[in-house]
Figure (tube, helix red, strand yellow):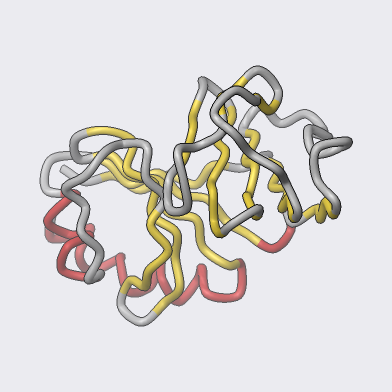
Amino acid sequence: MITLQETTGFTAQRLVGVATDKDSELAGMAWPDGVGMASHDIDRSILMLGPGTCLVLDRSGGPDRVGAGVAKVTVEESGAWRLFMLEGEGTSDLIGQLSPADLHGTVDACIATHAGGHPVIILPRGADRFELLVVRSYAESLLALLAPALSHA
């Protein structure tokens, strides 16, 4: 059975103009290996969206100011996104039907793609477990698209 759960109370900060190298860290976490990659710990993820640009997600619910001093520009984007956990047997197949993304990679990926025409960032978090980061204005439409698939799973 596939389940869908929304993660609430997270923060999202876009960091622009960050200088990353293999020896540097952000809040005790190593930088992702490159564009399209992610680093994770229990409550936080760093998504490398482009050269010198990343998005930091903090699921702990507290205010997060990790970008201070490491980026030329820090933008608070928490209100712009909704974050969902989609998991269960068959989830990979469901995502594969909605998105052209190759999900057979590392769990340290962040895949900017679309799901049924809706822009989404997919974070593989394990076998048949994915986080979907969706721009808030597309979230309800994406949920409506997923509802029939979830009821038949």
